[in-house]
Amino acid sequence: MNKIYVITGASSEIGTAFLEDLEVRSTESVDAFCQYHSNGSRLNELRKECKNVRIHAIKCDLADPMDTDKMISSLEEMSIIPTHMLHLAADRFDYMRLKNFDWDRMVRELTIQVNTLGQLFRAFLPKMSKAGYGKVAVMLTAYTIGVPPKFMSDYLITKYALLGLVKGAASEYKGKGITINGLSPNMIETKFLANIDERIIEVNARESAMKRNVVLNEVVAGLNFLLSDDSNYVNGVNLNMSGGDRM
Picture 1 (tube, rainbow, N blue to C red):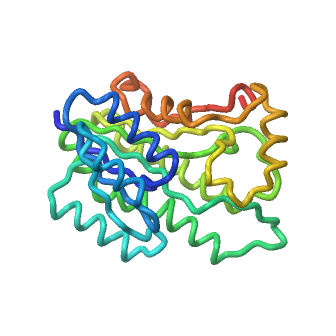
Picture 2: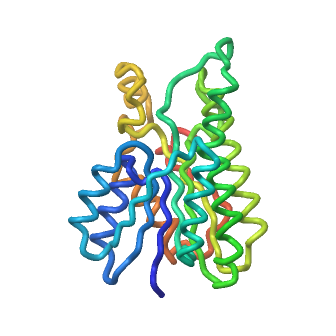
Picture 3: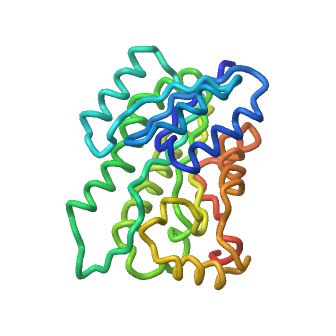
């Protein structure tokens, strides 16, 4: 089976780390259709470096539903039927107190994360179902488990909405050869946290059960499991990667 990946947020540190690992693990040619927004330089570098993974970089602003529709239409015109979908897209994280609740900001994040995944599901899950095979992994957060931290309402709303979409899709397509799961890691030290005070990141690491934050290769390993045939009996799961902090 020719593996075809559709990856949103592919230019993120998690996305590029996943692609680098996929190149190492692949024993046959793989096509990866990789969405990015503003900075595709690392994807272009990987495209030249990779021998097993053929990277097709697609510039698309997921905050614009019309742009998302164009991206999906272009994939459909190429008769793309994904075997694997990886949804990483998100705006850079920032804290927000409820007294500063901003609906426009909320809608933007819901559009980028939830609308995009819903539109991808609408377009491709029926085709994946007909093919009898499909693996989907969605980036969530450990804060969907247990009591969340303060000042994250917009972030939590978006991630819980994604979790609902994951579970709804997994229920609708169960028994059709498709598994749809979420990964919920603790804080990961990437550029996604660029707006967060370094002291908060340090405190989070110090107070965690593992005395550190999650590292990229651990996140990639979790995604690899959910996208592999080792997870054929895992469906509709929110995989807890909190190091024991949340149960």
